[in-house]
Length: 492
Image 1 (cartoon, rainbow, N blue to C red):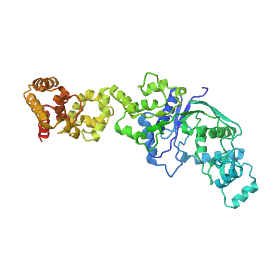
Image 2: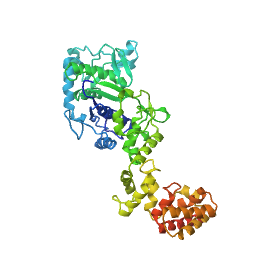
Image 3: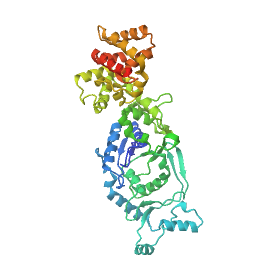
Image 4: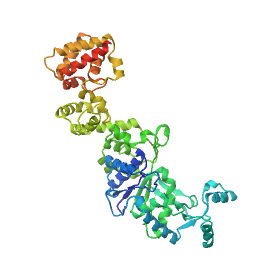
């Protein structure tokens, strides 16, 4: 490549952040970083009715949370600003004027009804769209239309040749001459449309490569024609390379829509996905680092990313696989890092202080290596570890029904209490030995029957960190109090 790669991400700040959109951002970022190029971030916020400042801020925060820092754009700056379309109106007006003067754009007064009527009269399908009838409108005709109160839209004069490109993902793509009608660049009144502003911004910002969803593939011939016109008037240096990324599908093999809750990036952040875990999974939606490897770091992604190896086939968002990938990253964290990341979730639940007390920190540091192996996302720490920071555990109803009902549970809890009360030292090893002796050897219970009631008594759940270590952390007094409280439940 003769020039450094410059990619871009240009979302509209409307509503929630879609994981498919962030996959596109990720691929553009990885491609730029892999090639030593630049990643440009800009905002398409000309739709005043739908865009909000809150969504704009949320987009910036989401990119930063994922680690997708941009080289140019909002709050970073750069030589091609401003980076919000709402601030570039004068730029677009000047471009339109140049295209009109050069004859690449023209005024079109035909109404949709008139276009459809002409198509029908010619024996054509009106769905073919605009028919080019205004290309040669005379000045006198234009004056007559204006006298009627009509305002023209501005259209680009499409070439009468095939339009082809070598797609970075899909290979050679061709649209036949005449397949794409002259399209509107600006509404009546002069408001520029996406069909103009997006390619203009790419041209003026020196974007060399455009990676975007395959749903936009049909608009590429229009962009190529506009780039030809922009190059002719000296505003561009040819068209960028295009790569159309596979769609992200949801359940039922349908495109993952914004209405589908699994499409919302916030869902994963709130549940406690690690950003590096989610980046890893998003990268797998159309790309693979190797046939036999699914887990990698963002740095390894950048090192290996090859846009020509992106698959053109649709990618299905598999929540179970996303969770499995995240769990692998979570378990690979150094213990100190795991504690630092899980603490805010415990603090938000009121279980520990935002800056844990020395005792809370001791418990966290001790239980962390054991809890880390049992968790998929950080938010699970609230349910898994909450019993260690409460006076009494919060009983799970299903766990109580399964383990704390009837005389068998009472017998187990009584035997456990007797064995532990007489224990000379309160250590993990001593607690384990005493319970196994009392419940398995003396009562003759199978381990699951023996320790299930004790686990629910101590933690309130059937799944918890290792039982004996948890009881050592709680201490003798708290553990015996929980066994007594559970016996009352079981005896009802």
